[in-house]
Length: 408
Image (cartoon, rainbow, N blue to C red; front, side, top):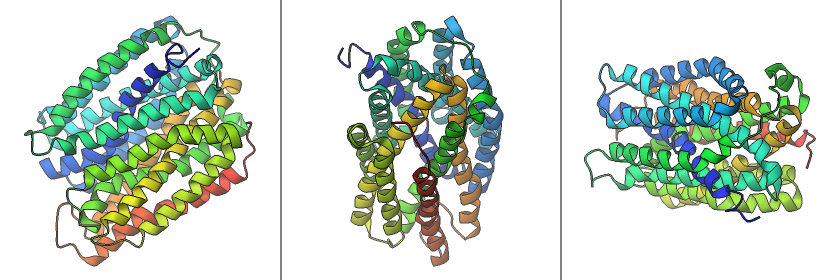
């Protein structure tokens, strides 16, 4: 059966919707609220960290709920999509109805609660779906993550493209997002309705499994570099490189390279094995981050090359690691809800680390968003945080993966 008959394009579009509500919002929202409403970076970092602490409880609970929805899953997933759309609209298209920091907190909580719920159910759906797809988990992951990365590309560049052509490009983006959410939800409806559920798995059974536990630890160290670079990307381009106006094109290069590379990494993994392929990608990521440490004002072209190379490595991370984990969940937790509740928690904790640790360090070093006369010490701190910290974390991830035995 071809990809259309297997409904793989529906998975790509739904992945695009979820992804557009994830990483791009971490890139844009803090800077948008800092620039537009004068909210301090430290306050935003503290709030984002508090929300991630909330996720420590919320995501496993959402995973527990996911495994017990049974026949009502299509309806509840649709309600999650409604919450996602309404929260995005409130975050960017509505002037804060009260103090901006608390309005930010309210809307971002709704957005990421919906994001978590949809992500958990969507990835859990793939655990059972992979058995119906030629190529299994890796092929399904290639369709899913390519769609997700294209969604990230569009969400990352759309506001920048609309700058100057509309008074509030983020409001226009939010309106378009609401429409696409509706289309994607309707297209995926038969998948939720037709799913056969097995008996729920307890979270302790997943944590007790040595390989599942090791893959979660690997995901933590491997995803944190992306969280760090995403949180600091706009600041790095604007202040370190002095490349105002390049933010959109560079983001497109980064995520487009990731989207284009995802199916290629999938093919390589099917031929040479997922572990060796991922290790190769991780080594390339370390080299890219190391080179970024040498950049300074005016190095836009060199950074564009780094965006392409590092973006390509993200295509491997986002395709192969979830496929590895999903393959293990098909053995340990066939419903997948509890497992991907933990996976979602790990992924978002990396963003919390970036927000609560890095933003205050940056501010204490004398950095202020939008200023042109920053001290060199602040720019050096920005460079070290943007590129040096990810290098160290990636090296730890390489060590974990190299010593892990995986099923192929």
